[in-house]
Image 1 (spheres, rainbow, N blue to C red):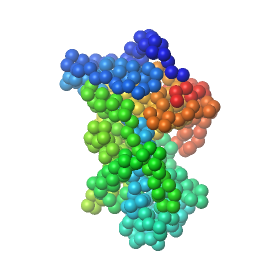
Image 2 (spheres, rainbow, N blue to C red):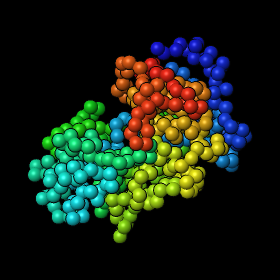
Image 3 (cartoon, rainbow, N blue to C red):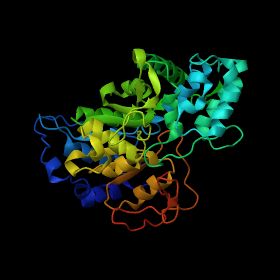
Image 4 (cartoon, rainbow, N blue to C red):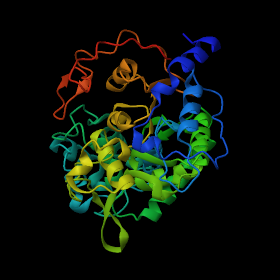
Length: 423
């Protein structure tokens, strides 16, 4: 239920300044003397606009001091739908995925199961020589497109066999990582071209559009959230150092981030290693204690923390994998999924959650132990209220090996089940 304006103002007056106090080292850096006040635009749930405005006013930085850092997830946080998916569908429709070396699909991911490698080889092997693009946009390539799309989208083969095994659920997601790995043989410039073509199509398509992929259909549209575009612009105008951290491929997010004024050097996506001539390999860059090519530390849950620490704050080695002192953490973070939990928890002042009914994230957001979490429905096609509580006290947390358990607070206590209240 939405709060009245009177109740909202009363809440801000009673709690606002306390909830947004920064650690002394950060608060001391704020210098408002030369700042023009930028206003957060409308379209937010409840008192969220006021809370965001208070963040901007408290931390705006127009002097020469260090800028406060704000980090946004991308897919379904800044845009509706997934730009990685949009690019994958474009690649399949336009025949831009290459046959792997020797036709061995196990070389595309160290976590691909033998069942998946066999299914992919059976569907795609006869269609092209090793290294050549597969004709997945043609009728004869439809079965290959269907198998690739099943492995990518469902983490299973078309017959239901698990497609991936053996990964750490807190540092990577092999189906997400598989998209940049399938870009092997192309350069970053070429992939940016593919992403730009997909972007043009998906922005032009009407809401709810679908597209033909293989023998089936898939989502065919993407939209920027106006409220998030406005918020990013307001933060940048107010002197914040704004970054994007995404589990979509680096060149893809670079193309889309330009639409909100974020340059490539402030985008952190999944990054390939490169080989001869600058062409992508099927391996990924590492972070922290994980070397390039190990493919086990991507921008996913704890991996997002590592990459933010490394790229934003210059922290190297194993230290990048750990929670840093408040002065070396973002003041603001925004996300929509369990993949964003760790970097959202690291934010010191305010954490914005776009509600997509993800268990661990919503357990932590609704528990709101320090008063610094705010929840907003999706800005386009918001989800209905979740029926039944989030299983915070039992299975809301997924451990590194996939084992489910209770969601714990920082002090080790169990978060009780939470009711979905913002939808």
